[in-house]
Length: 158
Image (cartoon, rainbow, N blue to C red; front, side, top):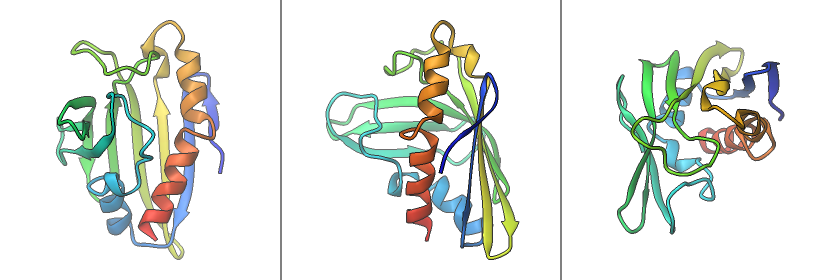
């Protein structure tokens, strides 16, 4: 699986999974800890969990085994089982974001398809991250970015 650059500031990744949209949405959102790569975290130490608050304005966050929390996103759209969108507050330094961090946007849509669900991730507005945003685009669009996350999601949802 590869990610496609729609334009200079957008990465688009798709996958088909063999479950209903309701299940795909649930695993992608409330079950995020079951598929999120353990090596993808911002806090020092070992990752305990990745979670989200399932509502508009809710947090996307990680927690370390030491109990530290890092909020790296905010839910913008919560419309089960069709669409979920959030702000991506992680900057080009890949450090825990500050309270005033600018966020790009990740929109995930779940469309019924023959034999299951077509899942599309559109990560756009990457230029809001400022100088060096192209490296962020290349990272989230590269093999260890959205393609890896979608492959792990597919394995978890099946």
